Length: 155
Ligand SMILES: [Cu+2]
Image 1 (tube, rainbow, N blue to C red):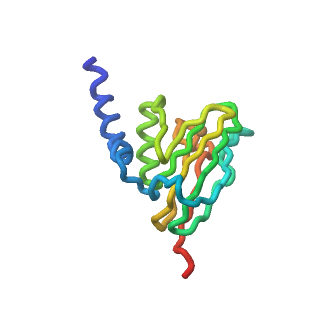
Image 2: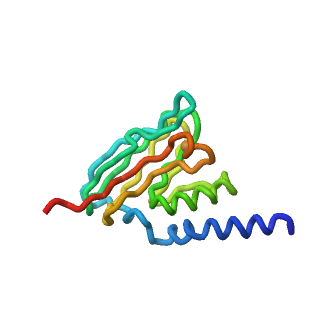
């Protein structure tokens, strides 16, 4: 009990940013509105030759656009899709190294078992470069990350 508490404390500190995010403030935009139009982007989680990846691993959207990501895990392992700022994902990744069993089912993140498909509906209302990543320990390093570049809508 006493031996566990310093670790629990560290985990609580590391998880604080994602806990804040879970309560309505997302770095990469906002959860989508299913009653509004959206553009569909199909994204696959792939494994092979010691690498793991998303394909595509770069998505370009216009500010204000709503995207329905249809995500399929084609691999043999569970994977995640967590859409956030690069900074938040980096912090979250450290938290997951301490607590690999963290499960995600949030507006901006899903865990998919092998051969499963899931969706994320997202409104990109902020300009910038955001990241989607799998933060299961070792997967990011194996190549499992990509970017969403949100640019100003043409006038
Ligand atoms: Cu993964």
